[in-house]
Image (cartoon, rainbow, N blue to C red; front, side, top):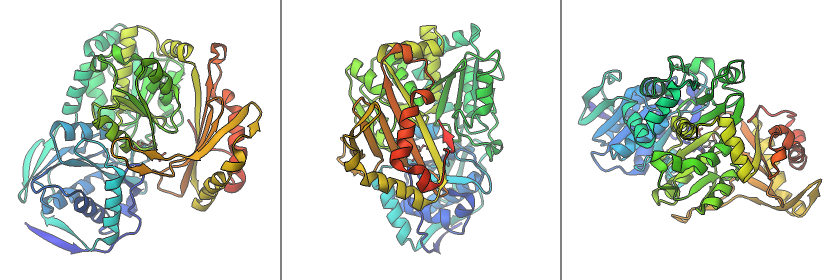
Length: 543
Ligand code: G16
């Protein structure tokens, strides 16, 4: 067994996006491509000799091969131990939990999240720090800089490690411990939520359906929802993780989680429905024929947190990404706690949580989480909701409607234009930035533009500044239109248009969001010239 130093040449395209490096599988399969990025991580994070690393992924195509390469490289780069999930599997929140519980130096998570998997589909890799959260921008920039100057990588020449059997093996002088992927995480969930109350709810005839979308959360949901909480067998659907997610798009929204949506809007619908994504960090919550927007879900969890054991002492503060609706801001105001507005990307919440400034945070992109780990957490959100329902003994819809009656309703929708030519998408953003002066103060029907800007964030903990985080058109009544280019796509550019209108009048809360937002949508298309500049007259996905 010897350490080999292999000469390599840099790839120019290894800049991490919103959440790590995501590319098509064939890109990762190019000789040295994955190895270069892993070496760039190791060279940037300066782990002390003998440090412990956590390793796992969402089980998508190329997961196992990548795990073997990373194990051999970790051994050649001085790590003392790697904790790897059985079969190479760890959901993203479980990886965060394991890093924290075992006080590891950090972790490598293999996932392209909600993007499809398969030989021609997406793969991804990211580094999480010792707090269990995604590396900060300073670290990801250092990794990118290293990747551009790399000349060699180190790897141990050895046979593959058996990943399916629990226990410890040696890889050179490094230990590889294959751990149960579910148990640490399940134990953490039991410490936060009232499992007895949820069990009583489920045994009292409350029916649920959880769609694991053939992704990583299947075994987690089976263990927690069916086994520990006693939900009827079959309550977890699409529970077997598959390398290609069964050919589906493991994105828990009304478009892609259609199996679940049909059930929840069909005859004899269960009382509660939920889905999570490829790597288990996103969630969608549904009541009987009722959709809870992720922005509302965050506000609801904040407003009801003290009903839940793990949060009974109250919240230090809350945070949301800038495009997420301001529903949670109203709750924070009522609770008299701080509310932070960060750029899109879970990595921006880490500092706030480490400094005990926030307890709950969330994003419009179907992500909700708390300081129990440093990633968003799909199953956690589902358990939080079930705990609230068990405590309040009301339906999901009744809980949401009561919330709107008290705080008002933030109508919300996001339009995604995927796979656009990069130049056309950049052209729209450029045009918008050039229009700030002419738009400000202008009146469009009932809407007057109060201000426009390109969102910039100064981290209140470390003072770092992140610029160019999305164009905001802010109206005087609190309504907003946001334009932003996605940082997670792997083909062309994805332009996201986020729309939000506040409505205090209960008599209008029953409106369909698309109906309530119609005027803003038209306005967004007009001022951006999106249709003429991109040639698209319809979004790819509306959420
Ligand atoms: C990632 C990030 C999230 C972000 C989402 C969408 O989620 O962790 O913070 O909101 O991407 O980002 P974008 O709008 O740039 O595509 P995930 O679930 O893909 O890891």
